[in-house]
Image (cartoon, rainbow, N blue to C red):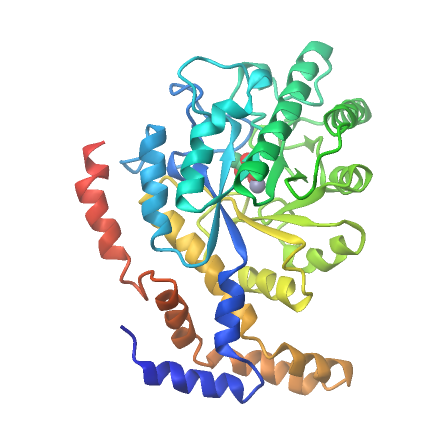
Length: 416
Ligand code: RNT
Ligand code: ZN
């Protein structure tokens, strides 16, 4: 139990700059954060257990104890969730289907995800979805929706269409909108000479996939660009510009992954620009270390800046926050807990900004005071409010979750 006096003092200090800490806690607790299922098993899934990850992405590390079955993954996620405050969704990939028989990607149906829905209902999680365009023989040459072979392209178009039905089913069953994120690895290792052809193919595929209009209160499609992948360094068919246009044309969300831009570009700066012309954004909050390395999210300047931009702009309803990282070099449950708690900390940090006050300073040209405040709030008693938030959510405060993870590792993970 934390010292109530510490919170009362923090509350007074924030009130002195016009910030209501109770209201901030309440607000942040209601913002859904979508946690990626694939942190639990190194993006392998249950379609083909002997399969390996492809598509230019890579999980590094071989820490023991990864989830090998659906029930292990669910148990691990439930346990991780018990240490994470706030409203949680689980983001599933198509390869996490629950089927005893082999199902081709273009034949997946809502029934293959029924047990996930039942579980999510019982536990109170929302579900997001992702068609899986990698780790498959028909993506082995680096192309899916942009493939030159019409039969292969058709297969992936059908997968895309099937994924939309599943996301719609999630939304309907759970009464919470489900985001359906399209990311394809398609690209070239070396310099191509006919980029146009592949981009035409990709555009054609999305025309077919998004032809049917869906109820946006149930499912929201989103499209994700990137700069490069491993072995696909020279050209990514689905570039940022490609998907900006695609999202506008088809009225989808645009996914901004923090690891998918050149290193000096900031997603925090892109949010308000994109939202001038596009209805909504899906975020893939990650931590790129020198490249799209998908390290665990930390409480760093950019994660805070992203949260601040969402709240400063009043974009809570238009920005769907998701996490996207996969570290196999440390305890995977700790990865979920650390990264998700850091996203929550960042949101709380943002909700505790004296934004009205700083806006007035900026608008009146008083940049001196703006900088003074931006710097002074860094040493306001944030930690006391964070502890209160954790307490109100009945999750461990400070480092108290770590011994629980260590015990789970000893009792459960070590037996795997
Ligand atoms: C890959 C993309 C994509 C994946 C997940 C597994 O670079 O970021 O979002 O990480 O779909
Ligand atoms: Zn991503």
